[in-house]
Image 1 (cartoon, one colour):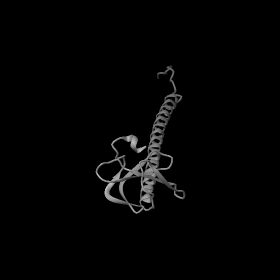
Image 2 (image 1 turned 45 degrees about the vertical axis):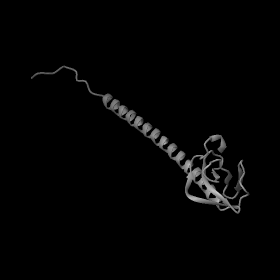
Image 3 (image 1 turned 180 degrees about the horizontal axis):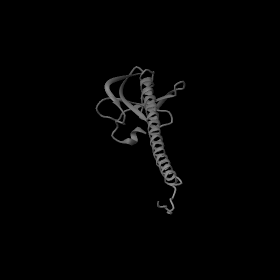
Length: 146
């Protein structure tokens, strides 16, 4: 009969604890990454929603302007506002040589989003032709749209 006098080392769970810590760190890094990704998506969606709100307000201003009675357009902007819905629209005589157009501008509240349309002026009313809606100023020089 042989007796074994060698010491047997008993594992105290250090490798298990180390593996759990590594898994927790990896999980934490993944969660932080997802959180950053979701935050950037939320910011992009918020910016897009705000843009569409401003765009729709400018579009509503333009539509509202067409239904109003205006004074004869001059070389400078003449504006009207509608306080309930915070609409603002302006008109002026266009410098385009093609026709006697009136330039109509719909504005978004507190923003630099403008939508334009070309119209004819008849008896204090604006007559808009289809296909003249623009999201940029049709004048040859941008300074004529300010």
